[in-house]
Image (cartoon, rainbow, N blue to C red; front, side, top):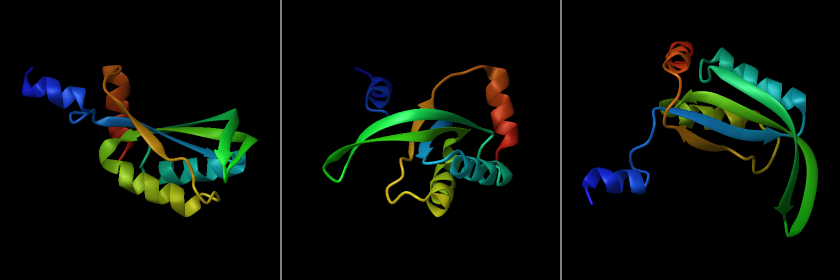
Length: 117
């Protein structure tokens, strides 16, 4: 196998753009995070969706109504995004994960590039 194949196989080569996911306990908390990320040009778009979450916390199974934020941005901004979320987030251990966007509409990705730092 080629070096390039191994890089793709083990996730070494990844996309320039990302979608970051976090959940909050209220729509207001989600909007506060979204507005700060947009104001600071750390995100081009934040979608806020109500979700029902079932998860383990301190040895128990919990259920909660939460708001999922899907944050569209650039990978180079991830550390700033994570710091911003942690500074504003009320949860002790907030979900903050990202997925690489390895392809997409050229027009959309150009827009994302223009609207972020």
